[in-house]
Structures are given as structure tokens and as C-alpha cells.
Image (cartoon, rainbow, N blue to C red):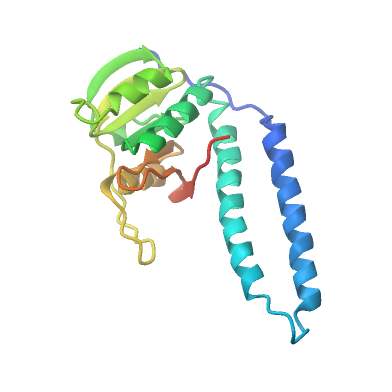
Amino acid sequence: MTNEVKTPKADCDFSPLKEQLKLDLQQMKEDIEASLEVFNNEDRCVLGQIETFKERLIQLESRAATFYLNCYLAPFTDKYVDLSISIRHLSERRHGALIAVERSEPLEWLVQPGTPIGAAITYTLLESIFYPGNPLHDGAVLVRANQIISAANVLPLTNTMFGQRKLGTRHRAAIGLSEKSDAIVLVVSEETGRSSFAYKGQLYPVINP
């Protein structure tokens, strides 16, 4: 099977999401400036506003992560929408998942091979692979271009500690592979249903528009 790799595009076009991010950041900037103006007023307390800003920043981080995830995936697979849909559905059902998307750097030498699939990417196929009880669900799916190459693969685990956070095996595997390659690794937590992606050794939360 040929190692089909697409040439990265010069830019990604997810204009609506990008424009919404800009508007949200501008609004937050204005709200913070307004809070600074009343900070010295002893009759006003900004603690509640600070808590609100913290919650809004978390939402902005997730929205920005979704924007950049699509940008990172689009040059290398036309099926990034199917990937997003599958992650959303798996997250809603709390079905644990791990999907490694190959980009410029081949992944075979980093992955302990699992079961060959060799099928076009569809969100229904991905969701069926990670359905609890499926023999292939407890491992990583390897995606190259528009195909699911294999399932039940074993990825290298990171040894990096992330503060006080105790990471599960899926998250350690996602970060581990991203530390050793330029792959994007999507992960869904079975315990919380939260979805995220690993890139260059960092883990970012994801929302789906």
C-alpha cells in the first residue's frame, strides 16, 4: 500500500469559526478593560467577573483548539469532518477512543501494528470500531490520508508529568506519539467523555461546532 501524503496547503479556510474567535476575544478584551475601570471602586467587587472570565477562557481555549485541529488535519485528509463527527458522537456516548492521524512523518516505526483495516474513513466505521466490547476498541486506529489503515495499534507512552493531573493510558499514548512525530492524535476519555487532541507533546481540549 502506498504511503499517500498530501502536500500541506498554504492556509486553511475555516472563516466562520475564525471570525467567531476574533469576536469573542475582542468582547473579552472590552469586558476586562471595563472591569479595570471599576477595580478601584471600593463598592464594587470583581471576583465574580474574574470567575466568569475564567470560564469564558476555557470555552475560548476549546474553540481555538477546534479551529487549529481542523487546520492541522485539512491538508492531510479530506475526511476531517468525519473525524470530527465521530469524536463528537463517541464523546457524547463516553466511548473511549484513540485515533492517530499520520501527517508528513511515517508512523510505522513508532506503532506496534494491530489489525489491518484498509477501508475508507467514515464516522460510522470509526464509531463501530470503538464500540465497547468490540475486539478492536482497546487500541489506536491509524489514519493515513482518507483511509483507516489499521486498528488496535499500540502507541508509545509518554513519561512526561503534567502537574498534578493523572493521565490515563489513552492520553499518555496520544501525547507519547505526538512527542515523537508530527501526528495529530485524537482521544476521547471513557471516564469523562471529554475529547482532546495531542500535538507536539501537548494536549488540547476540543469542541465540535
